Image (spheres, rainbow, N blue to C red):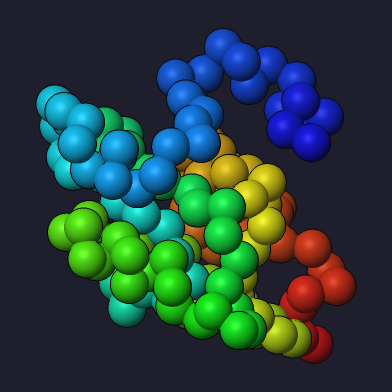
Length: 130
């Protein structure tokens, strides 16, 4: 799905991994500690340091396992954060995004340096409350 939305994404400084969060915690980071993105986090990301390592989790835990990935990240001492969606848009349901939408939102924020413009370009109309 990424190659459709972003044909040249392989040229970016992005790494894809299927490691457990413990492996991420053990890595050496030169700038800032990684930030685990979770819709359950209480920390809204107003801006993003270009040197930050952002972890987009693949576990959807909105129902039966609500908050599992957030608790795991916190247990490991990882910083967490979430997109400031509710500040700029009203959604019909959950603020949980697909991995592709989360990735695209980061890319658009980087291009626009504006959450409202990035959100407008990424969030599907079907999710927006009128």
